[in-house]
Image 1 (cartoon, rainbow, N blue to C red):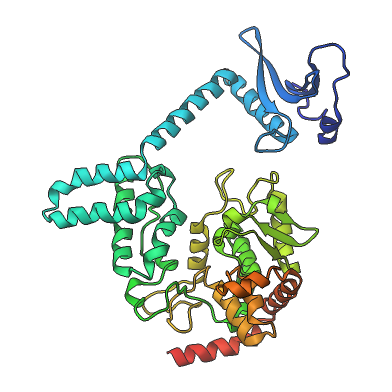
Image 2 (image 1 turned 45 degrees about the vertical axis):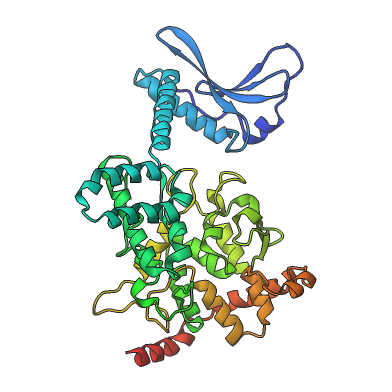
Length: 445
């Protein structure tokens, strides 16, 4: 077969193609290998794959022309046509194959919808409570899950619950009610383990403490005496050294964490960022209100270093709705688990080996969220920028209602200078802070 597939059309030609007006029926432009661009008299464009199977000519629609997620690009159409040709070589009807895959996906979605966290938890409790002699214990199981977990993840398919979902349940009470929160975490872990045993989910358990959530949350045993919401943070003097280590790592999680540090943004805001929020020409990232903790739109000035991170991952973009930091699963963003595992790799520790990167006050391994504290400490101790500017950069709400009523601007121009100064500090030669870090460790030991 000497035919060269995927060589006749170009993206520019597809965009410029129009229906001539006559005849009053769709026209087709071939790309090779059975792939056609079909243009209706109305001007709408779609992709069509034509093939012959068992002596019969068949046609298979591949979707409308356009950008994902609603449209199909020329490259994506060629890929779909190539997959269809592969099925034909094995004697499989691609239309019937697609229908079977759709039925299977619908069955899996129906199964997932039926097996929510709430229903699986109730099934697990029902299956195990006969062995729980203490009636109070049985009631506590139900009460803690109903009070704290069900309102947040109760209606989620148990197969889709990840680390960030578990964290959304635990964060509000972790430092306020450490004993309750610790028990709740253990019960969520048990429910998810039961779900895996029943083959209702796969993969690791996102509620496991040791080596997982222990990397993101302070130990319940050490919370007493701390301010609520404390996240172990890197001392600001060591930020350049950490950034040098981070920039030497070739991983999507490393780029996401680097961007989070340079923008002083919350990790959830970074991991959920999509390309339509980014304006590289204006050097601004506009986080929509629905993704902000305070439910207010937040404009983030992008330093040259932050723009460099975005340009490094830009080739992976599949359209304005695609995630800036994509995960391994197609169409999904990077997960919180990826950042946790990155910090774990960067921060190995053991009984006789303390973590390399740790909080100066508690000695605990640092967290991704803690870098917001690192940035704030640098602002207050090492920069000339006022406190209200640092608070604006962190998107903190001004609790003084009178002052907030008059301060209606977002100080964007001044914040742009602040973030440029922060990026410059993070890029300082790490040798300048090695001595400081060594002195701190000597005192701690």
